[in-house]
Image (cartoon, rainbow, N blue to C red; front, side, top):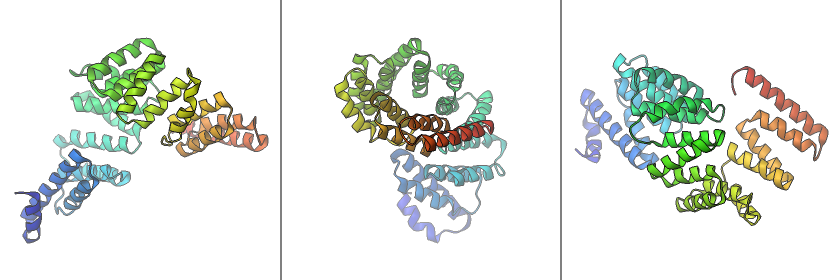
Length: 325
């Protein structure tokens, strides 16, 4: 029966028959969302699942996923925690996997890491290994050792996966040539032009950077174009204005913050430094703020900017002690 027909009959159904229909509709629209990423589908899926009278582990699991896809982090985690009370042993792997996925999507990488690390001790399925790899990649900015931990597991998979290519790219940035060539070789085998461009960006010579820029343009990746142009501007000064123009359009994240600060160091343009500090406050990078305001104090309003530098350094020390960075 088509979903539209089942929806039309829904009002006439009662009890167990209604619950079965609601489950089918919830599942149907969840699958439609996964194929299309049209948020209307996940909203419909959630509306049907919430009407199911007796919510078992599968229903609760899918409600948690719907909340996650809608960006409702706390609601998603609450559902998964409640599901633990009704799930049987055989359902725990699925539940914990999706809970870790929800934690990762909500920016709680450390908690996701602990769950996935426990899960892969007993279950080394490709999907588990890949999520563990994604989690370690998210944590790499804090410590590259997370990626080194994930690489042997990712290498054990039969097919080269995106997470392994990204791991090699991260290690190439940290450790150099050995991983650069591995990253580029695997990216070409994988066939993903965006991954190839990222690997070429790490390689860093002028020819590779121009090829990366061309690929980023082909896949319409503005972030990649900005980073490639920025790297090229170190070699070709005439590309600096275009690089600045694209960098301004990037989302406010750590990478943009670092690029702006580096551009400031090259140009000594104070607005670039102030913009990098604005983003640092937004992403709560206290150590960068401490150093940035110290730098700004040498250019203007020395007393107030030094005071801010000390305040942010103290905040960095306190959060480090609490294990938050």
